Length: 266
Image (cartoon, rainbow, N blue to C red; front, side, top):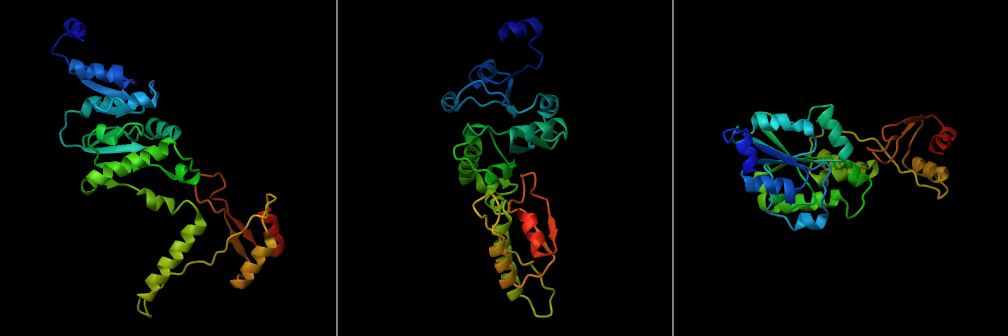
């Protein structure tokens, strides 16, 4: 990098931006200039990443739009470092359209590459993530699993100093309505048992699951039996078990009879 500095002047501030740790970022480290790791399109395989734990960029980004504010605010000391991770399409939309994860005078945002040990990606004060997709369609061995593993390892050594927004174990319980309902019903029952009889009580609506019939539909006769056992009365509301992510997750049907129940389910 010395010829570049000779050409443009040694008094100027230089940055190097690239998507390869072992070339771009390493070049910045050896040249003693600031480096930004562009993590959107990594050019190296997982093996190379694991073999380069000491190549730590000054900043990590997922979108080029983040660069100007990094350069503008990087000299402000003691900013809170927010590590973030989510689905690629959502992340790009959040940055480009909503202007999120862009540095300011109080916050430094650091994209967390799940393939690299988080302890080698710098100090992290806050974890922010979007994990609903992973818990709804879990696939072992993907980047979500790596992220969770890396985050838990980091917290094991820094838990007292780190804040986690939407702790993964809490998110998991909100993906599907039935297990969430069972936990809420139990929590409300415990709460009511501790209340004075004259205090306001929290009521939770009755709910029963609809079992698939194995042919792409639902067993309406079994569901009707469950409804009678739990003293259901029409009209009733029907929603999908999955509470987010799926296109029909927020659809709702109001059913006024058993005939309508069959039509709504099948």
